[in-house]
Image 1 (cartoon, rainbow, N blue to C red):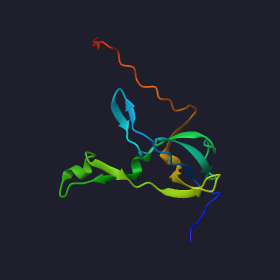
Image 2 (image 1 turned 180 degrees about the vertical axis):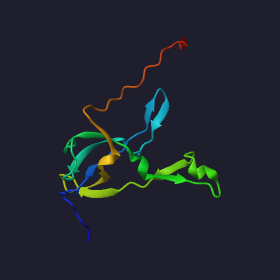
Image 3 (image 1 turned 30 degrees about the vertical axis):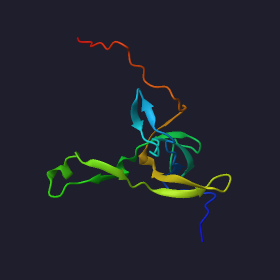
Image 4 (image 1 turned 90 degrees about the vertical axis):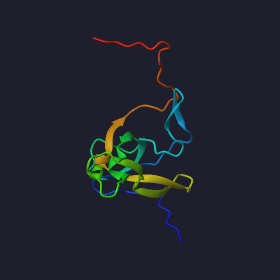
Amino acid sequence: MALHIKKIKPLNNYLVVTGDKYKEDMRENGIIVANKGDLKLYQTVLAVGQVIRGIEVGDQVMIDPTQYAVMRYEENSLKKDLYKNQKIGWNLPWVTLDDEEGKPMECLLLTERDIKFVFEGEETNESIIIPEKPTIITN
């Protein structure tokens, strides 16, 4: 038996956003800045709870998944208290919804505090331009 969610209404300060991931490695000047399968830090809002203000369905938002990071701590080490731990993954709250065609789609169930900002824009393949001759500017 499978549950097919066609419409969802989050409660209070929760919202549902797409769970878009990179379809290929993202490179800038030959350096991989995001791996294929990594979660994009910008998503589209699919549903909002009744107490959320300033965010509407269809908005593009920049998310902050830091509270969902899974860290590796060394045994009997003071480092576990010093923010110098290695992130080994994410424990994100996923929910599966049906898209317009009835196919399952993985989405994120976040809270309002997981959103950094709402923006208008689009993804491009442009990269940072580095000058041919590097220069050092001093005061």
